[in-house]
Length: 237
Image (cartoon, one colour):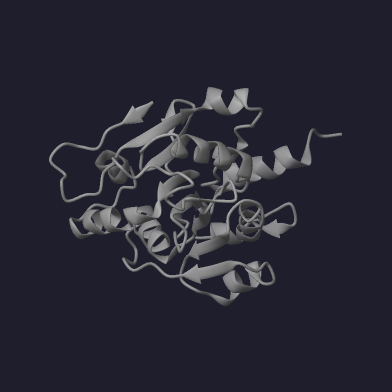
């Protein structure tokens, strides 16, 4: 599945002539040069005001678990959030982790992605939300293969019939597109997909590759968090 960018958006960068390949430096030693960007600046309203990045799963905070798993593939992890002692402590000792603030404060995930894209020194970014406790390097690699196969600007999972704009891959030079959208008053992450050419990767593709769909699970509410912990604990005795 592929979506073309909207007509009449000549001011926005679109696909064409910029496919990912070894020749243009997008790959090194056969592997994609990618940074993981984890959006952790939300206020957690649906979680009762709790910082979802600091919820624990498997005896570690979400954000530490995410960075650790993401670094199995990514060159570095960039956490987009207001710096705090708790957050810095949560990722302490991992290495290859940076915390950067939003430039457009309080404007949601589009603003967070903008900050992460600008901060990345890699040409491709793997974007995650801090409430996705089980990012999958295998799923991200598959997305990378799809991105490399064409001239699209992003590769996005489609799970349960819905696009997953987080746990997706984006070209880092899309920072200018995000900035233009934010300047125009846009806040929706979906607006970025409306403005560019992207390729969708359906859940059947992941399943055929032996990759589970747990990477798409997010935790927005206390009920979902309790369910996550219960499922991890297994059936009652």
